[in-house]
Image (cartoon, rainbow, N blue to C red; front, side, top):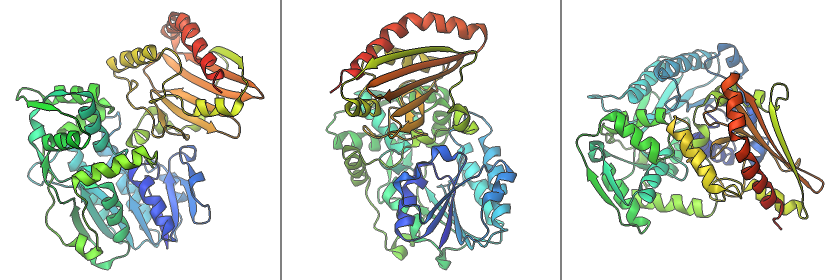
Amino acid sequence: MKILLTGATGYIAQRLLPVLLQEGHQVICCVRDKNRFNSHRFAPENLRVIEVDFLDTNSLQNIPEDIDLAYYLIHSMSTQSGKFEEMEATCANNFRDRLEKTGARQVIYLSGIVNDAELSKHLSSRKNVEHILSNARFALTTLKAGIIVGSGSASFEIIRDLVEKLPVMIAPQWLKTKCQPIAIRNVIEFLNGVILKEETYNQSFDIGGPDILNYKEMLLRFAKIRGLTRRIGIVPVMTPKISSYWLYFVTSTSYALAQNLVNSMKIEVICSPNNLASTLGITPIGYDDAIRMAFDKIEQNQVLSSWKDAQTSDLLQKGLTQYMEVPVNGCFVEVRRQEISHPEAVLQAVWKIGGKTGWYYGNWLWEMRGFLDQLVGGVGMRRGRKSETEISAGETLDFWRVLIADKEEKRLLLYAEMKLPGEAWLEFKIEDKVLIQTATFRPLGLLGRLYWYSVLPFHGFIFGGMIKNIAAIE
């Protein structure tokens, strides 16, 4: 069976893809930028990657006509633009119009549980997308989930940040809101299970786990599983704006996403009864077990996807390709070289940089730079990295984005996503027995030049110590 998978670099699609390939399906992955898609993990026989931007109707011609079904896994909730509802509607209309010209019999759409009495902007947009997709010649199967719990999921990582960072929490009223969390494993089972099931055509199903909990209960149960004692006090005076800033500064979410999450968290999301789980033979996983399963993956370093890698930024909107060739003209360039005795060990050290490993020198200064970035609305150092040992193009690495991670060429190229009056690249490369570390900054006007000269003394201290410590690794 030939399946079109949209949102292929996103959290859900990265979990679904290996399951579809294991089932023997031919999968066509839609991505805005092929350089962000790591296809090396999969056998190439049944996998094809095409570049499609659903806001650009011309690019939709890359979608082949001989597909049997499609997954619609596109959303724009974390976009920096305040008009994500318009973007989602445009994408859905363009997708529907193109799919109607193919052989697709079914579209499977993952949406959010909708409380018709009160809708956030996020859930209202999801409902509108469902309406758009339902007015088509193909059959639509909509699966609606609330909080998704799994290693690397936004919900899991936000709860983890709150519980592990704050022994005492003064929290907003929405912590009393009830929801029905679902394990990522169950989500994938549902998405795979409804393939060409005619009894699910033109139907909508809420999917959730067996537990109905409020957010306070979820935090406390998470803490209990991790062996932590936590105290939570709820106050009535915390406005949505203050709540958004609270999430932004404590967790690794962006402020735009925090705003949309807060608006959604004020509304109960509990499943309407249905028999889909029993029809498909799916056993719902409880919240506590979902947390334990997530940590099993983390401890085994087997996190397949992370929501942080899919966060929308100007860089991802424009594509990685145009940033991969580091500019020379009009730039400040600082190159350092250090002889090394053990190239393979040094390469492994470079591949582990950032996250829990740190930056090999002056980590507190890196953290301070991240905090300053966060104060002005930047990403800060909160995102960390998905894997402690492996990294691929398109992934996040603290306040950097990975552009190139090529072990054969022994080259790692990073692009800064922090707030800067210009653009910055950091490159590590090994040639023979020499480690080359290059920092490049393309300033934006006078402010950019003043910024470069103001941080230049720190570069000598931080970058000099970093390359020496990396080069000394045996």
